[in-house]
Amino acid sequence: MSITVPALATPSAGAAFARTTVERRELGEHDVLLDIAYAGICHSDIHQARGEWGASIFPMVPGHEIAGVVRAVGDGVTKHAVGDRVGVGCFIDSCRECPNCLAGEEQFCERGNVATYNDRYADGAPTYGGYSTQIVVDENYVLGIPEGISLDVAAPLLCAGITTYSPLKHWGAGPGVKVAVVGMGGLGHLAVKIAHALGAEVTVLSHTLSKKEDGLRFGADHYETGDRDTLRRLRGSFDLIINTVSADLPVDAYLRTLALDGTMVFVGAPENKQQFAAFSLIGGRRSLAGSNIGGIRETQEMLDFCAKHGIGAEIETITADDVDKAYDRVVASDVRYRFVIDTATIPA
Ligand SMILES: [Zn+2]
Ligand SMILES: [Zn+2]
Image (cartoon, rainbow, N blue to C red; front, side):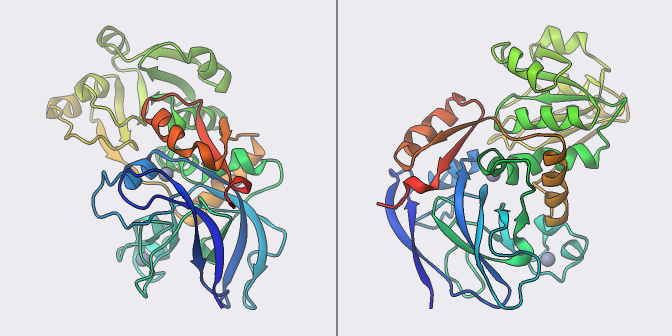
């Protein structure tokens, strides 16, 4: 029998959130039922809840930064046990057969993975995310949250953490590597913490210097604005730029801050097309790249790394009543640095 659980849903694009219930499927042989403790608010929740990416499924229960505790497991489950602290990120299934799935890069599943919300299971039923009190997920798509990170600051790691960890690892951030992080929001502040813990020399390039103290506290070695004079002064400086902002950027000016063989990676997704001159790449054998979250194996590696280095997100915990207001504040960049919903406030 399926179970009915409290959730927070928006009935149509941009409408206010309201308390409701959703059905979670009966526990299958390889399923884990978890009690959700906290759900982070990701900027992509807002885009989808407001219908800004098109083709949204309503009513929608967003949330793909989920942290909680295992309540029950199916008979065949071996990876998680009742009472374990666990997390769920951006997807809850994939084909498991394509080369990318077999390589542990399920985020790039050739048949498209099943997103945690605003998507459909194979049988056509909609998926509902973490703004809820319980969720049922196949054990292979459930992550272990190590002791040493509390669940509230762990939740945002499931999207924002892996989104920044994966490109930092892929492009070799470490001792002797100069990393620039563009933007100091939900993604950027974790990029700073993780890049610092990896041993890289970290520079933040932010809109203003208003978060400089925080940035230095999170491990940045330098904190600059992204104005043209600064970018000119920093020409040839960086081995890797992680661009976390979704605003339009003078891409050429940023590319020229890369040293020989440097790479600029987009993890933020600007609405508008971005332009650059080929010469900005040619002039230093530079690369322009993108990256999207990470696979299950790497997400677990990221959680273990963060636990070892004492890294969690900087959060503002809110109740179910505050979500609409929180969305407006995220859009206004008025959050330090991630909102997390205390799901105990969701039941009516
Ligand atoms: Zn996200
Ligand atoms: Zn696949």
